[in-house]
Amino acid sequence: MRLVTTNLTYKEVQPKLRELVDTMFKIVPSGVGSRGFVDANKSQFKEIMEYGSKWCVENNYGWKEDMERTEGYGRIDWAEPEKVSSKAIERGMNQLGTLGSGNHYLEIQVVKAENIFDGELAKKFGIVEPEQVVVMVHCGSRGFGHQIGTDYLRIFEGVMKKYNIEVYDRELACAPFQSNEGQDYYKAMACAANMAFANRQVILHRIREGFSKIFKTEAEKLEMHMVYDVAHNIAKLEEHTIDGHKKKLVVHRKGSTRAFPPHHPELAKIFKETGQPVIIGGSMETGSFLLVGTQKAMDETFGSTAHGSGRTMSRAAAKHQVRGEQLQRDMEKRGIYVKATSMPGLAEEAGFAYKNINDVIDAVSQAGISKPVVGLKPVGNIKG
Amino acid sequence: MNINNDKKRYKFLEDVAIADIAYEAYGKDLNELFENAALAVFELSADLKTVDAKEKIEFGLENEKIDNLLYDFLSEILFLKDSKYMVFNKVKVEIKQNKKYNLKAIVEGDNINPQKQRLENDIKAVTMHMFEVKKEKNMWKAVVVVDI
Image 1 (spheres, each protein chain N blue to C red):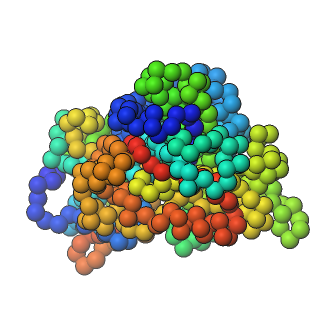
Image 2 (cartoon, rainbow over the protein chains, first blue to last red; image 1 turned 60 degrees about the horizontal axis):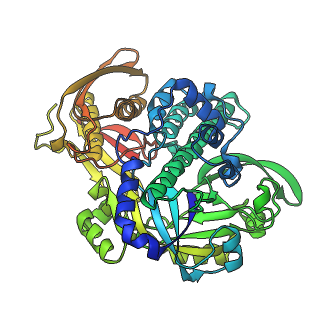
Image 3 (cartoon, rainbow over the protein chains, first blue to last red; image 1 turned 45 degrees about the vertical axis):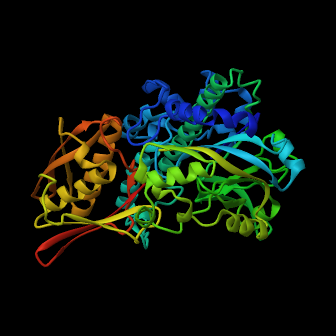
């Protein structure tokens, strides 16, 4: 999940919204079998697996400051490309710079005055005024990460007996962390995480190019700074305090996201006083939130919070209730211009298929595991 | 195997998985079961009426366990979709059982072209959640949940 600011207001963007969304749709490929615009060869792709965002910035797909605004600086340093199958590489190599499908999206959003909950902190994160336009991206490592998952799922299935492990659901196949299989997976998964950071980084590069073209102004002058980029499907070794003792733990955040408090040693200097920005995505109709990590998250949830509103309705049920074309027209009437490669896919993502994002934000806020900073209303969206 | 056949080959299970898609596939033998399980994946990826069988890909797999063979077979199709940029509409499977199960498959389809095909879900992975292959009376049945 990645959030980027602009210094444009909705009034300035609105007349060009359609052109802007159409351009994004063209330059950020999405949907089944889309090819990315980064033509990386095998040895470059290995560097991407190892260096993530750093590779992108060094190859002119980003600004240096983007890295410190990314979880772990956009690079997990225990990644080992040798632990990744050639199949995964072949599947993922050409997907760098693609959005994917399902619930992945690129969204143009607006800050409304009534949705600024902590003005001072918002300013520190780059959200300085009501009506400001921002861009949010939700996507990951695409087929590459899934192939790694598939490969290791089969490896783990074969060794669970050896380690005397039984699981209730075969999808939870695993191996001890310190075993060879466990360590290999940990290093391969880091390659997937680095590919995901890189994917969102090159997409950000494209977003900057698109805005720059439409508004005939350089991205630097449009102040298209990153607010933050946070993973929400990753396992990492972290230090946590358990019963007063510091312990190294593997924290797996799946369907959750990191929410570190101010002064956490893993945070970049710019977030030392504020705490880590947290992005929680809602449906394409209702909006998303920027929050900040808290000490309570550290004390109670291993520095984690929710990552999105979550579905309440199956994809099939959503499709029975609305057709994609109808939904697209209805949303446009409400001021949200949406473009999708698949109309049934669009219907599956209808707002009513998701929990009310406000309830989710209330829950994490009342639990004290993250604190709302601003709410963001969608005005333009591209879907895979 | 042709898709224009009236017999029920697979059924999507609408309320089993909220964020993913679950289905049951059927077959009078293993070959038919595998073919039908693949056709469900094809249908989830694109409107089959808009896909031409222009290119053929053959591959082989082997496994001691029939469920793992199906998992690998469906995963191979997803791999081919992404690495060859293809959507498929035809499949032929031949499974032989010696010590292990040996599978030979031919899938047919076309290069992905959004102008030509009505594309739907970009399936990310076959999951092991609820994954099952079993024989009920005289029919083979599989339960598959794919990650969307």
